[in-house]
Image (cartoon, rainbow, N blue to C red; front, top):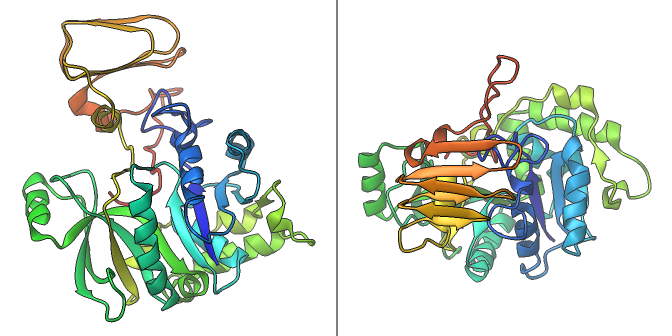
Length: 364
């Protein structure tokens, strides 16, 4: 069975002030009436023969997640609750330990947008055959511009008998503009989406060989939290035991496994993907007026161009500016230059700056 695993974590800083620690990016309504989590969950319903989704999230976020899923009519799901964040490799390990070893796990960050669900489903079909053959597949987004904000995957030779799936030749860190332009022209480089498909048993085998402390600690945390009577299907969720899980190394799937395994494969994805990583991204995605502005809420603009202005309840007026971000969240206000969108974070609290959000923790 193919099981969508939705990773719904985050510190709530990258899209401050709408995204907050208590309501991080996946749970915020950024592009319409639904949150990114809700659109991700609804997208999984389009995957033929997929099982009920498995949500992996922080314990404190689960009440809001359950309400949001209930609001879209999704009641058939399971949940694994983390007592603290430990990045994506332990989260995927917990999911793999909770299901049958022959189940295919489709790892999906909850904070991504995908415009073409049909293309997304077709990419999964190709990747599923490779996953059943014990390949660990990552989805590489076909680039349409030189992008310096994402990591890249270089594809190698096609895998015999598996149409549309390639060996991974290398992973590349976020490039400078010149390198990003070269990658765009090779036809072999794709953006690292942070989405994966693999057989649960294959992932655990590789993890036990490459980073054994992660499955050991995660298995102990799951065993200590286990309850009889099919607890995994209980919508109340399973809370991983804190002491064992706290000792688990915090590593991404890429670092722990994909960059080191010989079973790594990539499947191209051209489906209008975005990780919604900044307010600049939302300006790019949004409907722009004739002056190049994206405006929502009770906002009034005069002599303003190329800007993103988001009002909530009180009126917001912007006059005579170019390339600015203005986001009013009611009890907090952000004003920034568009070219500083990647630097957005909450203001210092008690003299101490909050850490940067890792989001899905893929190095893009």
